[in-house]
Each structure stands twice: as structure tokens, then as C-alpha cells.
Image (cartoon, rainbow, N blue to C red):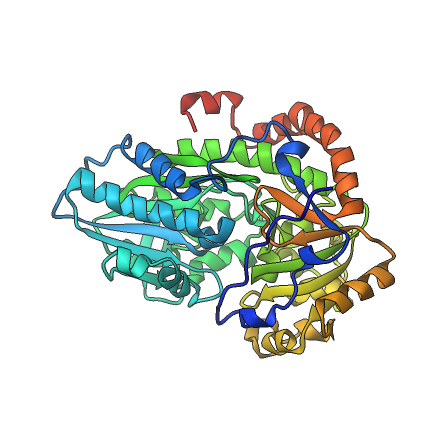
Amino acid sequence: MRAPIKPIPPKPSQYGIDPSLVKTRIADLPGMTSVSLKELFPDLPEVIYPGENGLAKVRQAAEEALMKVDMSMIKPEHSVNVLASHHGFTLLGGEPYAELLKAIKDVIEKRTGCRDIRLRAGVGMRFRETEEYIKRYGLDTYYNGKATGVAPVDQGIPIETEIGTLYGIKKVYDADWIVHAHHSDVREVHFHRQVDKAVKPFGMSYARIETRSTYHQNLGPRGANFVARAIFDSEFVQKKFAFAAFLNIAPNGVVGVDVDNDLYALNDRVTFTGCQYYGKIMTLFGEIDECIAALDFPCPVPYVFSAGVIYANFTGANTDLYDLDAPLPPYTWYTEAFYGKRGKPLLKDIPPVNPAIKMCVHNYAWTGYPSAFFAEQIPTVVVGQEQAELFNRDPLNLNYMDYATVIKSTEAAMNFAYRATGTRKVIIFDGAMGGINVSEPLAELLTRKAPAVSERVDNELLPKWLRQRGVDLSVLNKKVI
């Protein structure tokens, strides 16, 4: 057994407890180990980050890709908004995404002579989050004071689409050109189901709350994806769209940078890699028979990472989130609305939350996202009174602690979980890069199950997933990623 991988460190934020209060990381406790993702799935791609000179390699990959894309539409006298989303800053510590945003500015200046380049960084429910990221990664200075966070409650702008008037955020579109700077990790596959994932920010990060709410509440997973496509396809957006630049991510790290003037071509490639690589991890997670899930990452509860997969996806790992024949996952806001007062789904089409999760140990995770559902469905212990009080003060989590209990230390919380559940299998959502931090019994199970999972995904599941999305296997031959 190898030593655990160093977790992503706590970060100062108004949405989390002070880093000094995080006394112990779950990975540092006795019985914890790590498993290399490349050992589990040898066909995972080689990564440029993490690794030696990783950020320099991200910069090199970004510059090489950006030098090949058409920027002839951008003139020296024009203005450009580089559009970012908050989730990119939580990937692998955030530095690779920040480096991509810096490279985009530099190459546009170099190739076009344009100097009026702004950064517009969208958010989810935490309206001030990207302001923290902009300062943390020095983007306010790098963009010469022209970097700002935008929220879904900011002033809107009507966008006429083929399905009617929808609303974007005015600051997103107040330039001559926009550059869509995003990433290929699957993130909320329980919501978008890997359908038009590359287009999704046009109906989310870049949209007013009246429009983006169709995604969560009105239409549900799968059904709402056409809203983002309708906005992107509108004449208003198409006249401003210059190109897209994506940080290409696999579960084990940054693979490269993919840049294209054709967002739908890029979307096909994102769909392929999202199904192929992340599909194997998620299918493997579905093989876990019982475990304690430990949250230990600077993100809201559902967004903490393990092997490139967020906790919200793990709560649905008892189902195939990629199979579009399955109408509803165990968790989304839309699904949650169909749960009764006793915490049980009222529709037979809604599967239960992953029964393999016997308990959740909340060692370190942020507020800012409604998470009471998770504590209601899964027995939860929260480490430290300070963290419990933080959730009690959060308007989105006023009921979280109604379903959870407080234990004063990490060690005591884990000992309680061991006794209460009877299992020693632990999966840690702490953002470990290149591998996964787990307990020794779970490491043995994952290692034993991985070969059969890999074969099943390659020969059975992946062809079905791609067929459902109209993506041909030849898509990767159209562009080197």
C-alpha cells in the first residue's frame, strides 16, 4: 500500500471555515492509502498537470492551441470578453484554469493587437465566489483591472432565440467579441447527463436567474439542455462568438488544451472523453458495496472531488448517470422536488440515493449550495462546532444541521462512523491529484473490480452512451487533443 496523496489544502473563503480550524485531514489518519488512477485504468491519457513543470506545460499547450485558431475577426480597436466559470477554479487547485485564462489574454493581444480584453467570471449560488478567485490567482492585476465576477442577479439583457426571449447577463455580452473559456471535466453529469456539456454555460454561468432556473426547476435533467443551445445559436450570440478554449481534463489531471471556432465540434470531443474516461471511474464507483464517504475539500458539499468525480455524482453511482434511457438520477434539484415529507421519492422513476454510502463524515466543505437533502438522505456527522454554526448561518442550509450531528474532532468522527456502520471502507473526497485516497479495504476492492469495469465500458457501455448522443467514434480523428 502506498502513502496517501496530499489533499488540496483548505482555502480562505467567506463560504468556508478558517483554514486554521481544519486540524486534521482524513487522509492522514491510520489505515488510509491511495490508488493511482493509471494503475486502475492504464488507458487513461498521460497528463501534463500535475507533474514536473506542470503549469509551464499548461501554458505551452494553451499557447500552441491558441496560435492555430482563427482570430481574424478581432481587430485592434475591438473589445473582447473572456468568459469564465467558477467551477474551473476548483479543478486541481485552480492554477491550471487560471493559467489558461492568462494565456488567452496574452495570445489575443499578440495575434490581434487588441488591448481591450476583459475577464467576466460567472458563478453559481455563491454570488461573490469568483471575486475571491480573481484576487487569489492575480487575475485582477493580469487583466489590468478589467476582471470582474458576474452573478445571475446582475443586470440582464434580452436574447431573442428560436424558443422565445431568454435573458443573459449584460456584462457578459458588453464587448464586440466573446471567448468561451471552459473545461471538459464532467462535473454535474447528474444534471446535464453529458448532453451539450460544452454549451451549458450559455444557459448557466452567462445567464440571468430567470433563464438558468429552467435548468434546475422547470425542465429537469436532459430536458433543459436545449435552453443553453438556443441561447448560443441565437443571432445575438453568434455575432459575438469568436472561439472557445477548453482546459482538457481527464480524471487523473490536465491532458491539454482544446481550442476551436466550432463549439459543437469541440462539444463532440468533450462528450467522447467525458463518457470514455469519467465513465469508467463512475462505473467503478458503482461497484462499491458499502463505504463511509468523507468530505475534505474547499467546495460546497456536492462539489467535493474524488478521482475527478464530485460527491453529488457518487450519491447517484448506484445508477448509470450516462444512460439516457434512465429518465431521472437519484439527485438533482428537479428530482428532489418529488420527495415526500418522509424523505422518500414519490415517483417510481426516481431511484434511491446510493445505498452503498452508509455514513458521511463532513470534515471540511463549504456552504453556498443547498445541501440539506444530502444530510437528510445519508447519516452525516460534521466535524467541529464552528463548521456547524457556519451552516446554521447559511440561508441555503438552514436545515442542514437538523439532519446532522456534530463531533468535535476528525479522529472521533471517523471512529464513530466505523462503529456505527460496521465498515472500514472509506472514500475520501479531498481532490487528491492523479489518484484517489481511500482506506486499505476499499483500495483492494477498487483494484480487483477495475479490469472488468474497463472492459464493460469499452465494449458495452461506451458505444451505447455515444450512440444516445449522436457522437461517432471517429470524432477524435478530426482533431488532435
